[in-house]
Length: 344
Image (cartoon, rainbow, N blue to C red):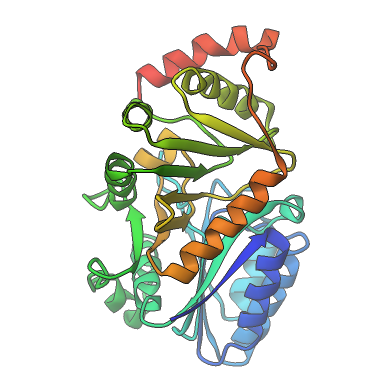
């Protein structure tokens, strides 16, 4: 099995475009945010070019996440031979970010396609080997929900994930059935952690079960570290992050605030297993959205993820509640957060 981590959106885009450029048979792309500005324009042009060359190109885009995508672009892409589908289910978002090329190379992680993300830190993993079959399976399930008709892909949607007993497999969350493996993994991994838990997320609004699990880990003597951006891309999420940081800080959780926007979603348990995926730490990801991630115990992969997180920690400041007092906005937002939390 071969792999490669990308730590910024721009680096991931370059790697994905290179793989698409070299595609010979098929391209399957599933994206939450895919907008036709730079770099989206580059992706759309390359996808159209490959379709003209006879490559089977299938694209799934979330209708809300990509609401700014122009209808003219959609028409042009479809005319080129690309099968472009929209995920448009009420209260459910296709939040995955997947690319599969020639059914041999897969990309999975948190990277969207929009110019505002160009300088963001993020995590995307390129994978080669048998694990790609599970990524195809994940894509195929969304493809079937969106009304796709390619029988080759639809056949993959019915195949079971065959990696549940190995050191590398795909985890998913599907609201429509019992496939809530990401939530189950978080719950069990945090419960079984013995030394360290490290979570990286841009948006931090943990459900009560997760807050309880992290608190119990601290009580057991486990070091719980959570890395967040000091400021996200939205003022409201900054206040939500602060609300939950303040609560868990008092329980013994250590927070690292990264100076730049960091959109990565990852977890490390005891320095021996890792997860990189699309899910945030919020009720949407654990209850409503369709999500996917890659779990791994491969020593080299875990070691590289540890190094990436250590690099980010070095560029962060440790959150100190006594030095970071609440803003006046926090007094207005806190009751709304409590109400929101009580109904989820």
